[in-house]
Image 1 (tube, rainbow, N blue to C red):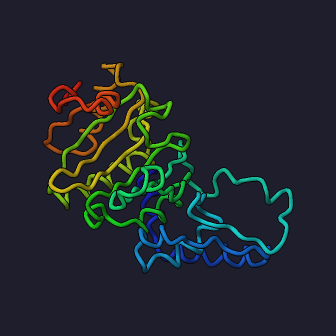
Image 2: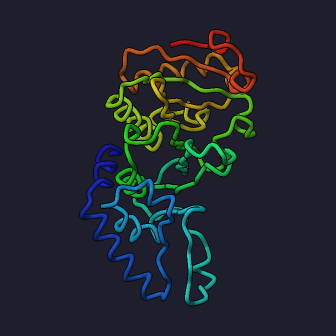
Length: 265
């Protein structure tokens, strides 16, 4: 039962116990633990950093913002990456990115931080507990939750012919937090069935008076499938809002707002 599995992933005591066991195993192998970088510490709630740090070394695939140091040469067996340590593997590996939009002096690529990748419900539970709610983020910042191998860029090969469903949040802070959680759970729970193949990732953009949630899809020219995805998202979120779809290429060309809307649900 996927709901039961997700609830289990939120059990803090179980996470801590698992982390302690992993720590003992890692110490036995004389391998030091992954350390949370300055960027990630800025994102995570302070009270969960230590727990995240304990579990990270064996139960999360940590990306560029984590550094691994070893005091002994690992055996060939240890060099093989583990595909999934969790009891409930996900259909896709999902990567969390954070964009600091407040540092305008830096290029977009330099402001985008790849935080972590998760491939099991247990990993997702730990990561979600550690994330700040969107409403607590600074104006101009973004969260991206994308399938591994797909970068949150319009010009990436998986996004080039696609677009995004936009869910306007404006100043609905509490609603935004709730819907963001639903979107993340729909991703790891594979709620969209076969339509999931055409979904690239989920985004929350924090802006002054125009914050929004977005769902990026692969092929915006396929009207039937794209509209099906839009309706599926709307059923999942259960909100009485109008969703609009824009092609990435139209956004890149800075077309007027009324000319960018391709579909509406």
